[in-house]
Length: 210
Picture (tube, rainbow, N blue to C red):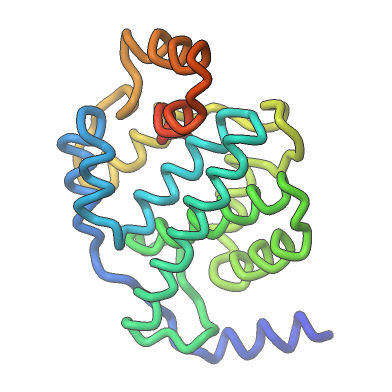
């Protein structure tokens, strides 16, 4: 009953549509070569933080899950700031169909998944419900792309690196392939980081995934 009541209230609230994210065009043009530079240039972009979180979730390790939680929470809060600046009052639709909203919605789901992985089930439930109330389409899309899976393995978690970057590029009106932090030397960098036991490098070395 309470969930139905909440959703009815949300239906009465205005629909929030965020402005264009300037980071998207930068990612389309230069994301594979200078992704972290773009994150630094646009720290207010929920999409950048969401992509970092998704990349960390794909590491399939406790280290990656914790990093994903931090990245996703940053993107979530930057998104809340933008929603409030654009008339959001704490409820109402944030439609997935409006492309600039997707960075926030992706950060919200990444936070839900990361919270579930580290055992913060109440936060997982809160974020999952928030996403569902904001956009059922977004919820259906994101949960299909990345089903919840606990633990450090990749079972139930697709890689999706190329698909994720392609989506960003397509949103910017340009079609490219590959991933921003991939390339012939990626495996070598990851192996070297693992051998030297530098976990922060391994987190940053895979910022983009589905």
